[in-house]
Image 1 (cartoon, rainbow, N blue to C red):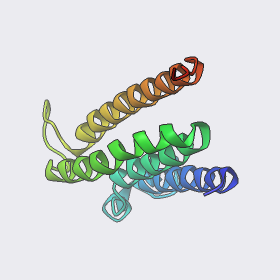
Image 2: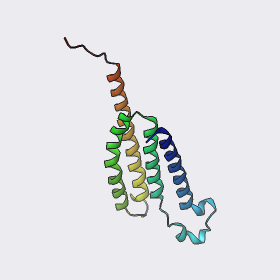
Image 3: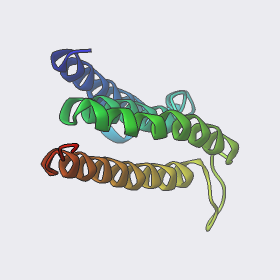
Image 4: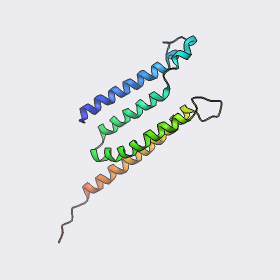
Length: 139
């Protein structure tokens, strides 16, 4: 996939995420009247976070070297499906002081971003060190 394709897919993912967010929050932005809130709750906010995760894939691919992307992709391929399954295991909503699906999405998303940044920074530093080390001649 070329950089141009990654950029196009990034823009499409962000636009879709914004569209899903606006659709899910229709009554708050004035599209859906408050009486029909049950109808407007069809789209869950989880889809919004999933699209942001997809957008992050294209963003990382766009701004990093292929070696860094490959290292990060190994983590993302394992983490994202596990996080989605765990998020879906939480109740959609519950009372006060409860760990529901929305809170789980926020926590798993934060962990995803932090670990991703650590992997990207460590791999980038490692590649720079390898590039700057002088090549030793065999004698």
